[in-house]
Length: 331
Image 1: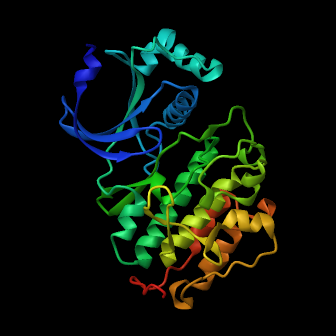
Image 2 (image 1 turned 60 degrees about the vertical axis):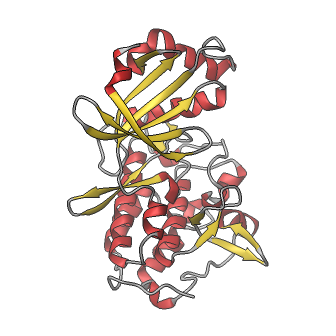
């Protein structure tokens, strides 16, 4: 076996999704805890997601404290493990070919996976972290500032995340308090060329329904769709609005419109009725200061031309008052 395989010792599974499994591991040389995500690359869809994640994380490696830090990416082919950068002449091109042509990247009897080694976030997902605690205005403000800065940083580097939600944000323990880390870049778009990322038109409708902007449902959108998703997250975080995922039965932070017993994603509801007035705050008028209500309305505008971009949001978020340290949740 290759030397890279022995660099890490897997301790336990900490998360599992549709396209990969995440483990807590130890870097054997430094004894430092890391996270290792294994993404099987046996079909083109998985390969595309894995490569998108690799390209996005590699392009901003170690540049922002609120973006998950990639240590390295290892390509496994059968029993051979190689850093992906060193496998460009062979395995890397086979992965690209699989993505483009729909072929298996190696012979069927040989496993082919990408292993992403990243910093370990002790707090788990932001969804888990917040729902395990009572509402806290000061913490809400810190998370909003951190996430606004992270998304503005990504957009400056021409990366559109396209799947922002509380389950795709991790929490690490910092000296001055919890530090959020934007993660899960499998659906991200690394935009080539120059110019303002908000001028680039995207057409692949992707993401999670409850966080998708109205224009994403139509398949014609810009990086401002990430700001809409942040608006959904911020609103749900402040008022602790949750729904239960139909597939996993997991409780998730997210805002929506109720039509009888049916929950309609905000973006879908605004697409059907662009003049829909969002009731912000939803639960308790005392839970949210007016300047934050106004900010959320500008983040959740149905017309993207009237919506803040990430750079404007980064500035505006620092002017917001967050109220008392502890909040009382609404009924």
